[in-house]
Length: 258
Length: 294
Image 1 (cartoon, chains in turn cyan, brown):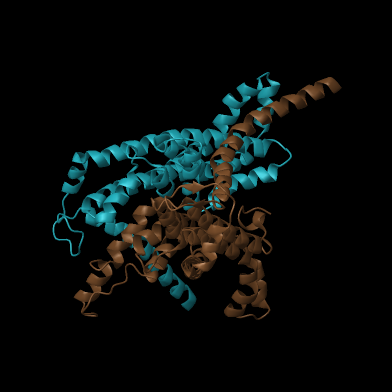
Image 2 (cartoon, chains in turn red, orange):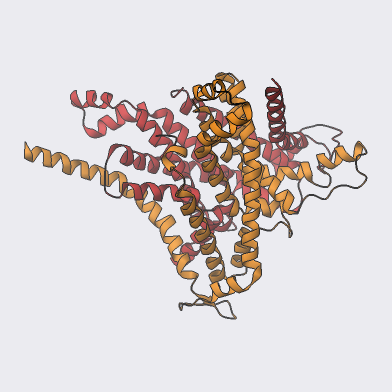
């Protein structure tokens, strides 16, 4: 009984600490005063209004959405290919390929960022939008692959046999049976890739050029000067968007398993 | 029969090639080639005009070994990552144990998710949010000052402590998932058997629970420690000069256009991480503890 109470209190404190900084961001975004100090006297939404007049921040939001959208599409397709190869085929060097897929997850972001920068310069590739995009594809690829490996492993292959027995060709089987069957996994992987891309900072930091500022880079450049309620307003919006996307992703990828 | 079999096999080969080539090429061009190029850069040097001399030499590595700043920062980064790992472990272990033992399965899943999902919000935002908590005008000082516990604000920000706090916060989900998974898989009947044989709660934990969940603990420690050593955002936002980590040195070298030095520093970090993985890999069954399958 004592253990239960002690552990319960301890856990409660951890939950409080995890949510405290997040709650403070949301709270100070509604602070009327331009300085983010406590106590907060008047609450209003004028920092959200200011946000809509801040063209630089809006521009960076647009860049982030573009990078996120394209890198999600590419990473999900590449991840699906890897997952199909790994789950459905046996080939020499499969373990090496798996290891190679995991590696970008383990290497520190800073090393990926600087090595991509060196490489881009060496082959005469301009840093900027496409470079950031490629960096985000690389970062999301391992996650997409592993999410899709697990959905493919759970997919009942006898459905494909049935379709083949009814005369469907390989591509038709893939398009009409396999892909719809693992659709929740695909959407989950895509949402995960998008979440990674929207929040990513270090790799973009090295690959960006003056014209392609993503939202985290914009936030960084403002925070370095001083935290403002406007930044907290942006962060609150990102927070809400991330939580909503994660909820959908989880609903889709977890419901089948449990 | 034989001809058909051969054709089928060839068709499968072609299919496999179509599936394998695009992702493989992506990984080779965006990961293997850049890292390999960086390895080469580490053996080059710059002259006084920051022009790169492409001749193989060990200048950068000699600099790293002889200047105590570089290896010293690597050691202190490893120390901070170790503190982070221990801190996250001390939080995750009792928490996971509580969730598995005392919370109904339905709520348990939701409560675990409640700790993981905030982890998907941008690291940048979650890190700077600690400014609002431990900064000079933050919540902690405001509470302590207004209740009269202290007269002067505590300057916690821009120290090693604030970096470790931020790191524990960022990496707690990494530690939590494998530990929670291993505790959840624990066979309750073994604990009951130990109880029937007269073992108290402490002995049960030490001699039954701990050995059984050790793969989860090791996995959690590895996937917390490794990215924490190379962390850049947290020390940059919360560290200042006192809380600098190895990642900051790499960035500084690159922003000073000393690319060979930056490359050599990066290779030292990568080599240290690989060495850690190899050492731990000897004691760790990756399939069982990371991928969660037997």
